[in-house]
Image: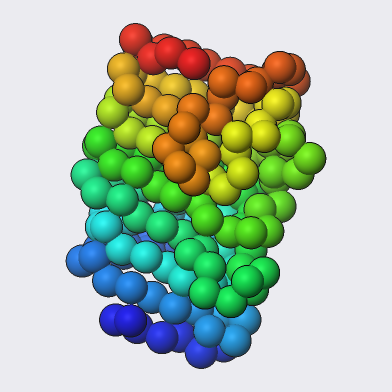
Length: 173
């Protein structure tokens, strides 16, 4: 690992930038809290292992390469919560690999905003069971997609939209 943060709390209220392809492990209940109005910019192909990520602001993955958040070292010792925005652009992949994803339960994406631009992909674990959208999803541009951990279309099984679904500029479901 490039960095091991033991019991650390990163409380972002402004701009937090992560670049350089590093690996970070949030050990012993380490966490990142991205407050409303804050932006967590991710512009690398890095991995963030374990810990808790609470996002009320914006997480923005830019550029090519694949970045993993909450890659699981210790089974069940990770969680992700998004009441803000997750945005993927620039041709990259952002994988939300938390076993405990607060806004995805029983096949329903319950809250948050998810924006994926052209040639970019947002992945999250067990997304192949996504049947109901109660969040806001925007696919904007050809090749924008939401997928499961294997890269397969997570929206193929979508049956009910109770939220907002925008499919724009050559995107498809």
